[in-house]
Amino acid sequence: MPFPSRWSRRSFLGALSTITGGLLAPDHLKAASMLSPKRKRPVDGDPIVPIESGLGSTGDIYAELGITPLVNINGTLTVIGGSVMRPEVMELIRQGNQHCVSIDELEIAAGKFIAKICRSPTGYTGLVTGGAAAALTVGYAGMMTEDLNPRLRTIPDVSGFPRTEVIIQKSHRYAFDHQIRQTGATLVEVETREEMIAAINPKTVAIHFTNILSDQGQVSGPETVAIAKAHNLYTFNDAAADVPPKERLWEYPGLGFDLVAFSGGKDIRGPQASGVLIGREELIRYALLNMSPQEDRVGRCCKVGKETIFGLLKALELFVNQDLDEDTRMYDARARVITDAVTKFGVTALPRQYNPQALGNVTPYYSWRIAPRLGLTGADVMQKLAETRPLAIGARSAGASGLRGRDPEGASEPKPAPKPHTKKYSDDDPESGPNDFGFPLWQLKEGEDKLIADRLAEIFSEARKG
Ligand SMILES: *Cc1c(COP(=O)(O)O)cnc(C)c1O
Image (cartoon, rainbow, N blue to C red):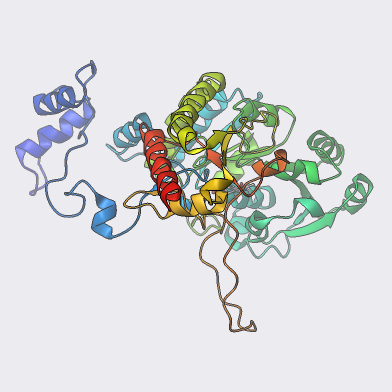
């Protein structure tokens, strides 16, 4: 067998061992057993190694680039990088990266795996997308193009397409409907059930449902599905941030929504730029036809690489096996670490806020009340935590959705700073006052509860002196 000239025998053996799962590569076995003494199976391909030179060789890539790493007490926000992936997810990304593979083949297999672990209804499958936002684009594109070549190429120019109107409740309009509009679809706003039915016409393709805004609209999810089915329309439920509880992964498709999107980079803790689209097989196929790796498509920019697909699958598997009660006990323990450190300064723990039935961001929220004599408001404390270095605790500007553009007609003075991120938690707590501060604790890594506790003790100890 002729070798390409740049190949040495060693690299050939290396390649062979990669193919055969490392059986011919004693070096790999050694490296693997060094990394994980309990590992029984050989590592396929290259294990993760320490970096000896250049970028990353100090072990502190953040310092090397001169940027501030954050302890996440804000939530799974894209502006601060969402969440941190588990080691098993990183390992599966490493394993998946050992070969090239047909992305379409991988996506179809991934879809079946997703449908299985997410207990999707018969006839449903999954798709890994480049985020929930990307799922909206490729999902809606698919509804309009189906598998028809001329349409796949011309979208977002949808002139001549038979069905291009998407009905949406006025209260369900949100920042992400841009991803529906970018397909060329036209949004038709309605408020009541009657208006929804009256808006249906031969150009209507679907009814959109923004799950997190369910309580703002007059038409419920099940009613939306019923109306759509009666008129032969598709339905799309954007439930991006609405797990946990994990049961929603099967409840929403089970309600009859044709497509349901979840973000992979939020509480599922997959790759930050990943999403899961669960839906009817035919629609999922149309969606895949509209996205990368296919070319000359509206969703070519919604690329997911094999690493993203593998990482998402592992994260999702871990997520559906998580026990929310057990996790909550762990978050409670973290809160106790903090409470124990601050009580002596006159800072008391308030009752945990936790509504397992909330529409999104269903995680326990912990807060504390500062004795007035310390002369600090809750906002002061959050500010000081965010100013902590070298590891900042939270980010005060995390409520902003990233860089903002310039208004050419606008006044010359800068816009007021965005309000700090305060999800909906405080609405549930009418008692919450200016001397209170709080945050969710689920995103913390091992030891970060102690770090927060120590820093708070420092802040309160300084306040007492001052
Ligand atoms: C976060 C979010 C999205 C976007 O999800 P990505 O995975 O970041 O693309 C879409 N819709 C809603 C309701 C969200 O909360």
